[in-house]
Image 1 (tube, rainbow, N blue to C red):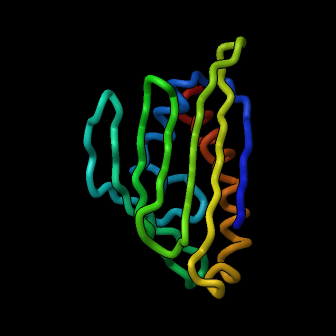
Image 2 (cartoon, rainbow, N blue to C red; image 1 turned 45 degrees about the horizontal axis):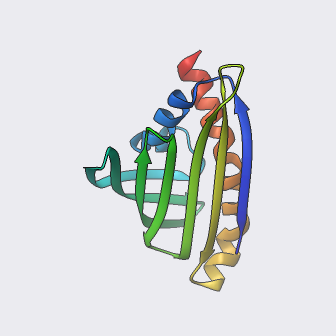
Length: 148
């Protein structure tokens, strides 16, 4: 049951960071292991946007695709990702973007997951763990490239 949480202070606004993470279609351009991402559906609900997306991740000869429901709450600057289908027993991912007094924001990234298959978990687990630890940094680097 790998779990990871990090808080990173960045010089970009909460709105900028929210927009960057919410732009899921661009993930294959910069996110470690992400080879493809397709949005199946997109709906507005109560001032929030609800996406269903398929993400394909790969490492060497291993490729896995999983489906998630992504709730984008721009007003609260929160993104909640719920697992629907794929190689995991469960996956829970949350992003929060909190303003700082200096004008930047604190990016809070949390992920908790477990693979269904122990063999796949053994093969991909440590690599996934490293990749998830790099996610927040990858978004920070992308923000620096876009917003500076």
